[in-house]
Image (cartoon, rainbow, N blue to C red; front, side, top):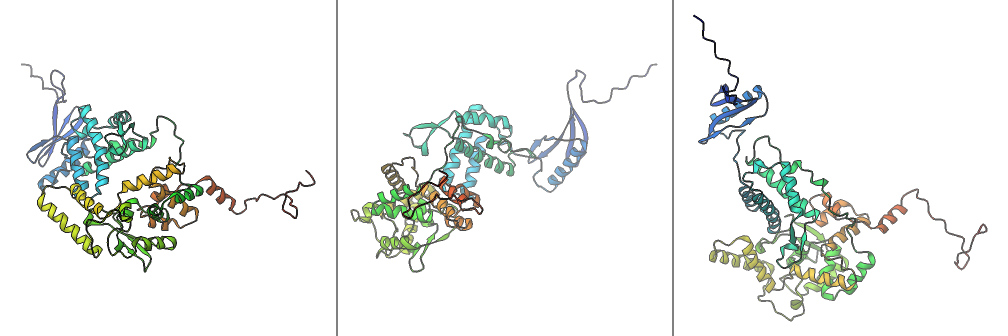
Length: 466
């Protein structure tokens, strides 16, 4: 009687040629199986079935299975598990982290929120439901989509719509990269997965049209014309910005108690009772010298509290403050009680709404809106024939460039500006051709132009060879 043939060895193929799973090994509660030429793990975690793919050979699969089994035995998260997350969940959770854990400034949060809203809109149009499906090719499609979008400056509803500039696109990509890095740390992406926004070379992006414009600052003559065109009140606004490189918000939030006239020091510090913070959260002290000290003495006069710089109608006496205080400490206590009362009456009020109440009160006692500074600055630059200068921030760049031209220690300049890195200070420095010319002419060994022969009266006379 003929023996029955033995069944063929298990090859991972069914009789019809389909690929099937083949159990290879089991380590603790983790099973290793092979499908075709790829190894997978099988285990249960938190009541859910997990089948992660293993990149490597059987030895890598066994080592990974051992780590997973040890983690499950100790009730720890598996090192290869991740929670599949939708784009909306990633955006919402990251923004909540930035607001409640990092406590970023509300203006920064607005920029992050706007950047990530574009990513969410793109994913919605693409029909993408899970962030682990994003690849470098997806990021490239996102950039193409961004180049076709338009927006208004500062999000104004009635403003002129323009396409995104290269700097705006790079900021959006940088924000998305940060959000993905945060998601990876929260196990929202597969283990060992790379960040597609990190792999994409944003530095290689170029504008559609060649842009040879350079960052400009006032020439000495333009600077002289600018301050000559200022009224006495306007000079008080812009002189501190040009001489100390202060941010506009730092100047408008400066209280009388922040200025020590005896020691000649200006304290730049956050105002938590106004829900306003210095951009870097770092307090710094600036010197008050010369013309600037005389200006502050005149601005403060005999006042004991309030803002150093007052809105024009308050400075001229056309409008009276809604409330007067004997000291800045009393002003701060009033603001704290006012906001506490508002929180009790509106338990669901967010920080933005609370800040709106604080701003409304500060305006009523004379604080200058930053928008007013912009309007006054643009009016003056247009009057002197330089409408291309449209940002108060240009004065901060002017201070940095002038300080570097004068040979100031870059570390001092960084500290005065309140920058966290020297690289940021470098970006604020713009040297014109004349500054470069003076530097080159002062280099040792540089040949000097030989003056032609002059007569006794100073007139230039031709040499004999001429």
